[in-house]
Structures are given as structure tokens and as C-alpha cells.
Length: 294
Image (tube, rainbow, N blue to C red; front, side):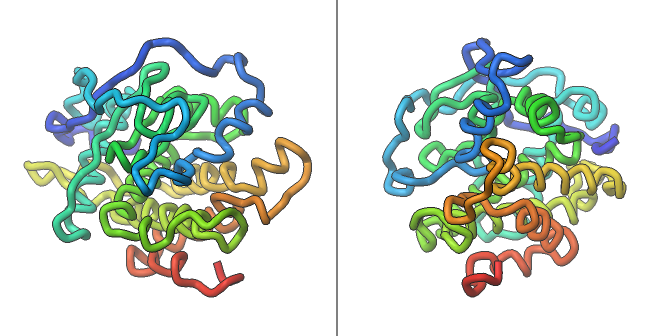
């Protein structure tokens, strides 16, 4: 169990949007197709062209609206329903970052039902979760977690899912604090700004999960209980399977570090663990480390 069953989630602002048509899943797209689709945007959309406000090909101007997610009022709802789990994560993340970022402004969280247009392209389970800077919005199709299990062998349990949401929230923090502007896209490779930004977002997710049981609702009840060792291992597994080297190995049988966009499996698990164990204070390091020290 991840959420405190008595936690009050009724104030969440998470919404649902989409066309209710599945893009991938249930064997519709094979592992090579999924890898090709998510290698770039998974857990952090490729920001090429976006920091200047441009839209990715296939994007739209549909506003970040949508319908209210109903019956997500308690932590028990979050434990039983993945949409409610996303809504609960939104409350806990806003609480955490509101305490740690001056003048924090929250992103919108959209649970995607099938697919929907964004200023960064189409959001769907095939694309993977991502943060869209022009929209100031995190987009997640929860069926993506099933794809992680089916196509990559990830356990993708509750805490692993929260790691993914926390990673995307980390990109919002990078956006509103100016780190995206200070470290713009400069190509690929193990020392690229893209890899640095992704590893910092992993660290941010780890720092949040390390403090996860300290975020409370209006009544002082914690949103989440302290993670178990098994849940932490599950979250680390999620970080591992989305490492560039693991994805490349599965897709082609070879690994080319010069094409890395998100970091190796070892780097991703290490920076998640660094944040979890040491807190936000270490999370500036991925941006400032010397070449080869990431």
C-alpha cells in the first residue's frame, strides 16, 4: 500500500482528456516500435525547439482543460485506482514543491484517455509520460504503466508510477526556475545538457519520494505511508529499464553512448538514489558536474 487510506484527496485538480482511442497496448505495437517511440520523450520530452515556444510536429493548440476525475476522494481510492493515484500524487507533489521552491506555481496534470493534442505533440501511451513546457502541463496515459510491464519487464508498481510522475514534475521545476533555459538542448551524448536535465529530474523524484510520508492533507494526515524496501526496489527498477543503454540494447543489441538523451540505467538509478538518500541538496550536481563525473 502506498497511500494512507484516510488521506483527503478531494482537493485535487487533476483532469482527464482524450479521444478514448488506444494508441498502443495489448500487443498492438511490438517492443521495437515502443522503444522507437519512447526512446526520445520517455520521462522527459525532447526539448529541441520547445524552449523558444515552438510546437513539435503533430502538435495542436487544444487547451489543457478536460473533465474532472470523479470518485478520487481518499487515499484508499488512490490505492485501488491508477487515475486516482495520479490525482493523489499531484497533491503530494504540489505540497512538497510549495515548501521547497519560492513562489512555486503548480503545473496542470492531465490523465490522457487514449490520445490528445498538446503544444508538444500528441500525448498517448505510445509516446510515454512527458512534461510540455509551453502548456505548463504534465501528460500521462496510465496504460503506459502496463506497457512498461509487458514490453520491458518492469514491475511498474505503485511507487514506480509515482517516481515517473515525480520525474515529470521535476521538469516543471526546471522550467519555472530557469534551469531549462540555462542548460538548453546541445545535442546528444553522455555529457549533454539533455542527459543532465533528465538525471536532475530523476534526483528530484528521488528527493520527493524520500520525503513522501511527510506531506500531509488539511487534517494533518499524511498523503502517503513510508515506502517499503520492496517498493523502493520497484521504483529503482523503473529507473533502470528506461536507461538509454537498456533501451538501445533491446532495440538493436548495441549501445552508443554518443546518442544518449536521458542517461544510462546506472546513472538514472544512481541519481534517483542520491535524491532519495540525501534530499534536494544534491540535485544541482547533475547540471554542474564535470564531464565524465555524471
